[in-house]
Structures are given as structure tokens and as C-alpha cells.
Image (cartoon, rainbow, N blue to C red; front, side, top):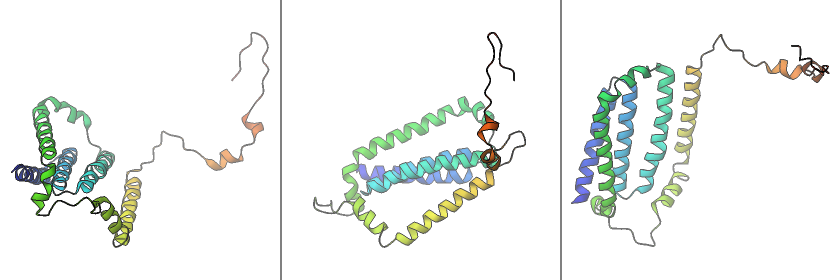
Length: 202
């Protein structure tokens, strides 16, 4: 019973937060709703016994959302002063979302052993290979090429985002490596022996 309650709770909040990601006007709010969707998707994975994928969703995807947040700030120039002005007004909604996430964590912990019942599969025996090992063997054998292609695409996307957000400023002085390398120690260091009571002359 608790497994069904946890499933419908996680699924409902995941769908609702995904809809909020689409319809939110502020990109920062969309990112925050996306984090909520990832946490609830991790809860669904936890219910079916895929704890490794659940941890991946929390660690990798939420960490990637932080990078996405950084790219949004760099590319869209979000006004954080306006966001801070509405902090106290949106505080009750934030506390409500935090309480819902806390309740989901409690339910997920209590429904940990009910996952195989919900998925319709029998509990794995002790000698069965753990899903982390099975996932790793499958990923690095059968799906090695798609995995490498996905990594290459993400690398190109990261380089493209850096190139798009890079802006040259006129009030800064850039380094000139060729000029630095061509300098000799005699030009860079000057030995002075000032007298007693005399200061350094610049």
C-alpha cells in the first residue's frame, strides 16, 4: 500500500514540476522546478529497485543543472536584484515545496523494501549480480559507442557555450606570452643599493 502511495506521489509531483518547467516565465524558476523533477524521478527509480540510477539522477543531473544555471546566468543576464526582492513573498511556496520533498524522502525510505513488489519482480537473491555491476558491464560493452558519442556531444556543447558567452572587455589588459618569453632577466630585474635614510625611487 505504501509503495502505491509513494509511486503516485512521486509521479504526480514529477509531472507537475515538468509542466512548471515549461510554463515558468523566469528561466531560473524553470531550473529550480527541473531540480524538483529530477528528485522525484530519482524516487521513482528507487521504488523499482534501481538505486544506482536514482543516485545518478541526484548526483549527475542535479549537478548538471547547476552548470545549466551558470550558463543561463551568463547568456541571459538574469537580474538577481529583482529575484531577491520577491524572496519574502515566495517564502511560503518555497517552504511548502521543501516540506513536500521531505515527506517524499520519508516515504521513499519507508517504501524501500516494497520496490520489487511494485515492479512485479521477485526480490533478487543474494547470489544475483548487483544492478550497478550489470549496468556497468552493459554500458561499457553493448552501448559503448552511444556512450562515447554522448560524451563527445556534451563536450562540444560545453565548448560552444563557453565560446558564445565569452565577451572581450576593453578595460582589461590581456597577457602577451611572446613578449613575456622574449624578456631577459637583465631587463626585468634592477639591482639598487640605496643609502641610509633614502627611499626607493620609482
